[in-house]
Image: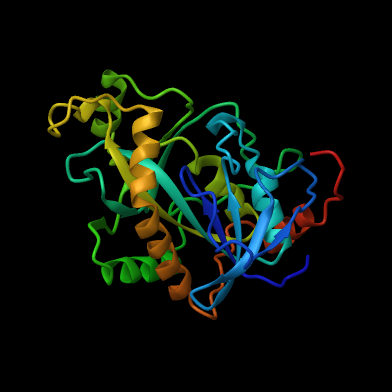
Amino acid sequence: MENDVTIGVIGGSGLYQLFESGTAEERIVATPYGETSSPISIGTMSGRRVAFLTRHGRSHSVAPHRINHRANTWALRSLGVRAVVSSSAVGGLHPDYAPGTFVVTDQLIDRTWGRADTFFEDEVQHLSFADPFDPALRGAAVDAIAALDVPYRPTGTCVVIQGPRFSSRAESVWMREAGGHTINMTMTPEVPLAAELGMGTVNLSFVTDADAGLQGASGSDEPVSHGLVMERLARANEVIVRAIGSIVGAVPDDFTPRELVPASASASVLARPVGGAA
């Protein structure tokens, strides 16, 4: 482990570049799990040294169910990252989570399947996951977002679906009735994998649309589509980057992640040889 950067940013849909051209160092990090979604850019944001990776690839070529989350999180941790700030595009399942709202997510409901969702396939390690996102990072993020002139929610439960298709109206209503506020395709297994490696995560979501179950009730009958999502993300890119910068700047200098699996178990994963069995 090189240990030269302690904050990582994982960019979601629409966020493919974090630093101005020519201001960042680019690294291709080999992992035991194959290639990362994109090369990792290392630069300065809000006075902090940051490693940036875009989870869908720089041309949005990696589908949600094909993202190599194990490679992505292992690579960041191998560089020394301990705090991960992730951005996500989400749909709104609840009327209080309208398009244009920022959400500091605090809970997850995982509806994905078949994804490589743990580093511990040949030993038993039970991840403590009652509070998926690090409380200290969430507190710093809420304070940072509250200081900006943007609509936001300090909490929210995200339902993570398999994708790449969007929900039916019936599914959307069902997920809202189950307690979901937003819907996304990528937060798991990214968040639990980061926790298995001893990294704390905070998520900033941007609501791009009212999900199928809210259409009409939200004042819009336009069904969610990839084009609509990307159009709204492009319009909001500047404020999304500004919000991420505020959170990065608010990460405590002495931040120490929770130990949700034994540190020795995390260390054994990080010690696995590049090119070895995944």
